[in-house]
Image 1 (cartoon, rainbow, N blue to C red):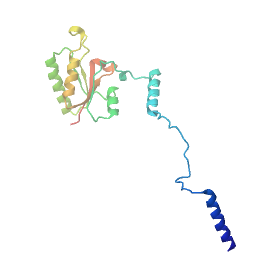
Image 2 (image 1 turned 90 degrees about the vertical axis):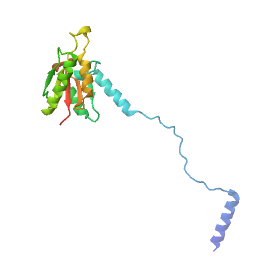
Image 3 (image 1 turned 135 degrees about the vertical axis):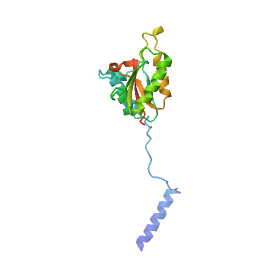
Image 4 (image 1 turned 180 degrees about the horizontal axis):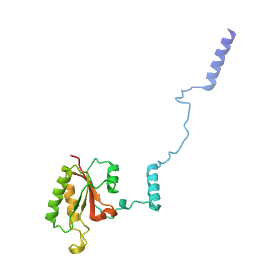
Length: 179
């Protein structure tokens, strides 16, 4: 019992010396740290990859675009299919040579050719439109027309300029929709 009396006296003495108190909401203080700026890691990886490919001797000539190439893809076509088409890896199942045709003749022949190829279940064809070296002004006429006509056809999923071994920018690979 005597210890309880001492405890009460000690507590009263303590309160007298400490004075008024207020409760502390938290007993930890976070150290001040300046936030790091975000690092664009993916952009840095992309930049390193581009630099690596630019300095590399390993390249695919058909992947280099000079502005003369034809290229069109319908939405939804897989990248692997497009890559295969651009590299000329599909078997050419039909070919149409438009050299020497007038624009109306070329349009009629192209329409007929695509209808026949689709009716026969053909998937990849090559259309040779020429580079325009023998036309007036040395500018390709049929190339631009073929580009426009193929874009208008729902039967055409994609087309691109051929690889150098198949005619380069004077020919186009055309991927047709399945029946």
